[in-house]
Length: 430
Image: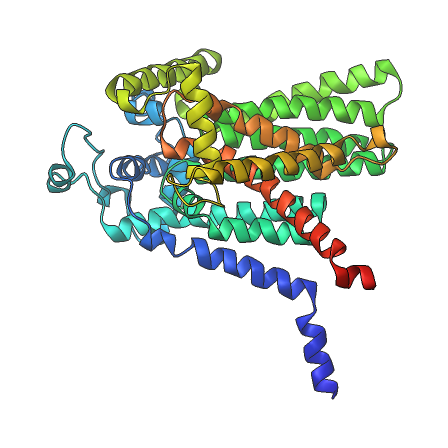
């Protein structure tokens, strides 16, 4: 009898449930490093560029090395270095890598000229991305749970496991996984910092400055994954304002905190952004501008080269972008051929956003605000905004909006499910 009691206690342990749920996420994402279809061209380019990891570690910082097009055009030190770590674990040296992909040649011609990496090399290059994806999803689960409870947290994990789109794009040897992981780290830091500030306003003032600096580091990692990660800086500015309002009552003290915190946010952003990119070292400000100019020029060439994939008019944007986020690539999706799916997901998104807003504006209802809800609204909006203005209808560009709208949909599904249970006859009888 004692054994059965112990077994029952073990099976009802929330920590065991959580471990099993996280293992299911890992089981859904990690095998994709070996089984996902390739993105011919782009993955090969990223893998080839991972040779810069050895240059960085060996201190080979000659300007001409880092001014080459492969480094400047891709603008993602974090991705190059993460891929480099993965293939080094797999036993691949920098001099065993493929040459950069030539987009003017066919797949067969690139393969014949040594520009197509082997399947094994691709798998090891993807492994860090798969790990980052699992860590990001599990960390995001903690924020969703803090916002809307255990059920919403598990629905979030279930939707991530079920999402063919996320399982594909967060595992490829490209920049999406590092970008999402950086944004989720910022999300968690935003939520925990705000929670401490609202719980004990007078006790964590020095810690608030440290947290703002940490958020800056996270923003720098996001920018070093993809330039639109700079949008997190806006969320950091809002975080500073919320902390100042919560922790200081005098205007002068608030102003002093804001000035110090903005300086730390800027410094934190600059450290990884500049430190990981030797191209910026000779003239940081000038070359940061050059990075954005290079990206705009690259996108102009892409628009000219792929006219069928462009989003030109406002009408196209208002039609294509919602369809991609809420139908084609949504976790709850039957592909492009079931138009009712977009309306179903839109309904869930509206309900989820309403729940988040309701939690965030608690003081207007005489209740405390939920810092996790505030974090999801602000960080999710900041991270998702730039992709909404993409000039190209390329599937991987929607990763961040899909990721964060899935959070809102999970919160809506959990709330609706709980309402149905509460309103059921059995629940009423009890």
